[in-house]
Length: 412
Figure 1 (tube, rainbow, N blue to C red):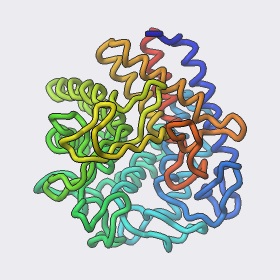
Figure 2 (cartoon, rainbow, N blue to C red; figure 1 turned 90 degrees about the horizontal axis):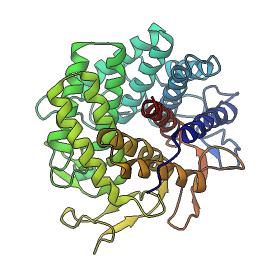
Figure 3 (tube, rainbow, N blue to C red; figure 1 turned 135 degrees about the vertical axis):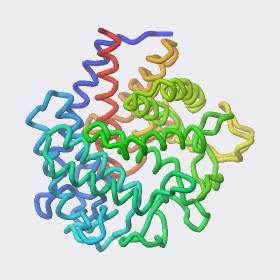
């Protein structure tokens, strides 16, 4: 087992973070309609008529705010964060009904999809909270608080806990959900709840409100009680109102991402008993996620099959998606590093380092910049866009920041 050179790795990540941020500063801003392009191709040519999503805008806001904090308020990153904040405030904010629109058209009109997807509300809170943390710009905190209150008022389930997946613009019943099948009764998802959790943790850091603290505690317990399968230590993907499973499978990237985000949430609460539970579960989740890692260091995207036949490495039945996605590789780097910090098991450190080595070899676009969307099991590049409603600087930028800071603690 080869142990990586931590200082060299840290230097590489520092440069990669600079390169990612420089790419987004150069190719993402929309000089005609404001904000950022909704899509930019692998050739770095923008698609000026593409719709713009609140998830992309919020993730840009979070990333450049976090980068400013990481670099001790580097002035070169705050203007991009400010641009994201101003566009969100002007075009995504629903001043009539509260919350933010899911999508707007290229000119900023909520004609594309004005629904209230809780996934999008969460990322708005996440970005706004981090922007306030970096700038102390009070309107950003006010905005985050407004969205938080709307989420709790309209979407929180006081009976079973958790949040309903989505609503119409006026917070009445939604016709459909963006990342779940409403027709299959999938009213609650691990994906949306994971990002609500990280958003509320970010908000709690800058606004120590008892209601926010209670929500964070409740979400952690929801994961421990309903969303994490106690037998497999994997996330149950899609559930109904009372947390009954509606669709099963394995999402390796979400499993490893949740393993460190849950611990981060518990650490913010400073409650010893809860932290001990999450510490144990975090390690078990990382251990379970190992089965998605191939010998080349790539982590597979997902496995779909009956829950009684969950795979080890070669399942007898079911379907593998062997894409090695940019965001999955980024989260693997952080999640396995977190597991190493908790256990000192060098196998986890190796997994984390191998994730970065795989990324360098297969995902970095050394010609046009940034990361490809993904590659298949043979290394063939997948996808078409460097920038899209889902392809953003958040997962890879955050992975660079998180891993650098964790390496710094190991070195110290």
